Length: 473
Image 1: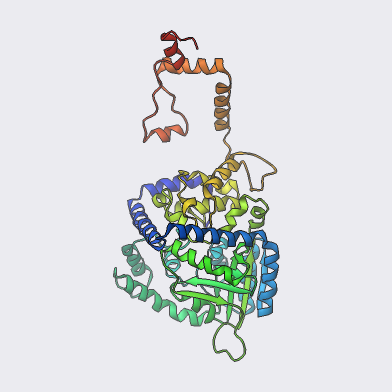
Image 2 (image 1 turned 90 degrees about the horizontal axis):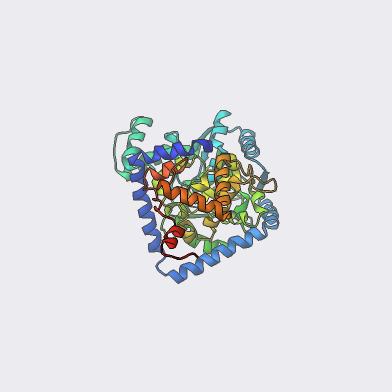
C-alpha cells in the first residue's frame, strides 16, 4: 500500500536500525548478483542480447496504440474478453463485477505486481470476497499482513527462521521447522485445495503478444498454471505497456528475464494462454478476461524520455545491484515498486507529491543502468525526476511537478549562484570564511556531516597566497 513520501526518511531510518533486515538483504543480494553473473559469462553476448531486448521493447512502445488495438482484436477472436481501465478504481470495479457475475466468493491469485498496484486484495475483501495469494512469497507476506519487498521475491526480507515462526503463529497445527522444503510443503498442502474451490483465478501477464492474442506468464512454482486453469474463470490483469508485437519477440525477453532476475537459464513453467477451454478439451477455464490498465502510463508515454521507463520487463536486476536498496529493503520506499525502477516509475504513476522524494534514494553509481537487460537509462531518469520534483512547471507531464520544492533550499542555491556570479561578492565571502576557518554546517548538511568530517576552510584564500608570493594576477 502506498504511503506518503513525508514518512520516507522515517522508514529509511527504521530499516537502517534493524540489523536483521540489513543482514537478510545483504545475503540475498550477494547471492542474486553472483547467480546473474554466472548466467552471463560472455560479456559480448550479453551486450548483444541486451541490444536485442531493448530493440524489442522500443519497437513495441513506438507502435503501442496500434499494437494494443491488434492485441484486443486477436484476443477477442480467440474468445478472450478484453477490458480497458484508465484508473485503478476502474480496474478494481471491472474485476469485482466479473467475480460477482459468476457468484464468486473466493479468488485464488497468481503473482501480479499490477494487482498490488491496484490494491486488489483489499478491494475484494472489502466487498466480502476472499483473495488468497498462491505464490509462496506472496502467501508469506499476506500471512504477515505485509506488502512485497521485491517485485520478483516478495518475502526476500525474511529469513527461514522468521518464516517458520510466522507459520507457527498463523497456521493451526503447524510445528516449528526451519527446513525450507518442509515449509514449502506446508504451504502447498494448504493451498492445493484452494485452487479447486476458488471461483475465479487471477494472474498477471509478463508479455501480451499482439500478433496472436496470446498471454505469456512465466513462473517457477506451478501455482500460476493452476491459477489459470483450475477455476472456471481466469482474469489476467496487466499494464498496457506489456504488449509485444510477435511471438518471436518473446524469445530474447525470455532469455533475459529469468537470468537477470534469479540467475536461472529459464523458469520452470512458461505458460502461453490464447483463449478459454474449447469444446472437447478436458481442462482450462471456461472464460478468460484480460484487463488492460493505464493508471498514468499514457501520460508517461507521450514524453519520449519518460517513455523509456515503460520498457521495464520487471526482472528486479536493478534492485539486486543497488547499494541503497540492499541496505534499506523494499518496504522503506513505501510504494508498490521499490528500488531504482520504483524511484523512476512511482513518481510518474503517483505524482511528485506522494513519491517525488524517491529519486533521491540513489548514489547515482550507475549500477542499475549497467545491469538493466533492456537498457533503461535509469540514472539519467533519476536526475530528470529529481529536477521534476523541485521545479514547478505547468507544462510538465509529471503529476505534481515541483511538489518537493523547498523555499529555503531554493534561496540557498540562489545565494550560491549570486556569490559565484559576482567576483567582488565571491572574494568577500571567501575571505570571511577563511577568517573564521570554518564552513557552516546547516540544514540537510547536518545529517551529512554526522558521519563525515566537514571540509576545512583554508586560512588564506588562493588570491592571498598568490599576493604573498608577489603575484598580482
